[in-house]
Length: 281
Image 1 (cartoon, rainbow, N blue to C red):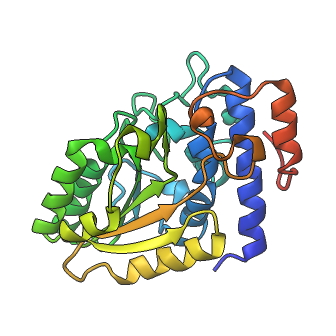
Image 2: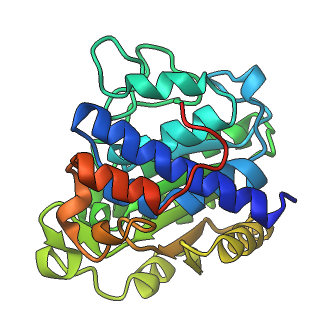
């Protein structure tokens, strides 16, 4: 297992990447990206069975990850680059013309690590379930992971997919919902309350775990626990509580930073709160 200090240093560096990428084009979604930094760092560094040097679209023999809430692409791009999928320097092209790093992940430029275009909310779970069933049909015992946002659960397709996965006993999938309580128009409880999310998923036939998404040790322990629940006849869901904008104090506690970029002064403040650990691009 990776040492905790290494995971913390990498998390800090990825936060720097996120704010610098969004600042560079004055466009993007820093809030949710910062909130999911610990999760994606631990997933790719310690949990996911993957081989960046031998990446392929079909992912035979490797665990797969799908980002359903594709607007938080900055954190995913940084994690992919920092794990060797493409050069770290390419992060500087984020959202620029002719860049492979589109605002929402796309596949037409064949960016390693990205297997489906995402950002049209509500679709990622369906894609992940299809991939998981494909692995079963091909006797591939690797797993499929997917991350969704909590506002995304307001989409009906999520619940159709949830019902299907339980009915078909798709037990090689681990889905995670980022419960930061915020979406583009405000708090989820103000826009459309989600109610008792845990009870709903359990009623749909899923095994449900809860996790503190900004606590590296808890993220690692919960993801390891989730892996032990696969193969038991039920799909697995993790409800991950996070803070939007975590690690940058002025971005926390508000939906404001869902999709705006920092100015010069704000960028410097964010970087000062996350000292360089590995090296900027």
